[in-house]
Amino acid sequence: MREWGLDPGSFKSDAFSVVDLIHPDDVITQPRTEGIAFRVVERGTDEHCIDQGFKRMAIAAGAKIHYNSRRDPQDCQIIAAGPKESSAIAFGEVFHTDHPNHVSFQLNDKLAPGAYSYLIIIDGVGLICTCLWRKQKKSGRYLNETIAWYDKHYELNRKPIKRVGGKGDFSIPDRYVHDGRFYVGEAGGLQDFMWGFGMRYAITSGSLAAKSILGECDYEDEIRKRLVPLIKVSATNRFLMNRIGDRGFKKVAQYWMRDQKKRGDGLEFMRWVYTPGIIRKMMWPIAKLAMLRRKKMNDGRMVTRMPFRGSLRRDSWEQSEEALKIGEQWKEVKKTGGSVSFPDSDT
Image 1: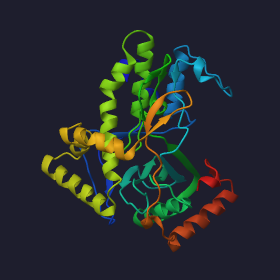
Image 2: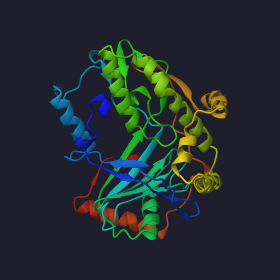
Image 3: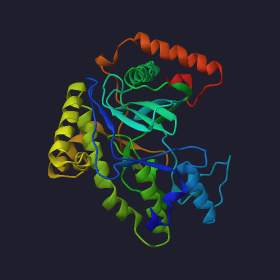
């Protein structure tokens, strides 16, 4: 980031070397590494959030921000708008807690169809989130059931603040520069198909777009060289994940821990997962044909997009008593001012 003129000290980040890996059968193991495995940053309007850090840097560099105004994309050089459609959705609850800083990552096809749930706690504020990669009716039950699971297995002393939601749209465009406009981040399909992460891709592509405008590189070439191979690997991994349930998730978790025992570093498994090896390169045409569909966007671009998958028979189940209590608890919190960032129709 510093090479691109960005100061990582302008926002708060918390480093972790270990994570709780929760298996589908509720076994908890801990992939770990020496040094830093990952960092957690916060999005939002507080001064310490990454959004505000980037905003301050942009203003200091001479940028002018226009609020409450809409620009025609044809008048813009860089397109960085969010998703227009959905390939996956996520719902979460933010809460106060006295639990120490912690991150958990759960593979459970019931609580998070085709994906994962997670728990993040930083400085007394926690987030429990479940990601849904298959379209569901009454999807709010997944969040209630997920919260109930974490309440049972961690001493959270949870005091709900608000509920949040979001969506992701996953696609690979034919071109990343179209009619002279640079498409960055999720607008350019630069997002991880496997887990849905995209912040690193967004920052990288945004910086490369700026360099290209300044004549320092060719954006199309750089994206295809640096990022597209990783995205294709993630899409192939997603194709494989779509074909396994909890039994497959359990094998993945077990292999991860065996690999850590063998190599002495839990991070090596994730490096291997994203290495564009021969087998995954051979699988890419199959994954592309089976999972992605061609689509013409409103701006004339052609993309190869991942539609939102339909539900499976195993996705039909009733909430537990604990989850129903979580739902009632949230109704009471809403009466006292608890906010929701998505309409009821989304759940």
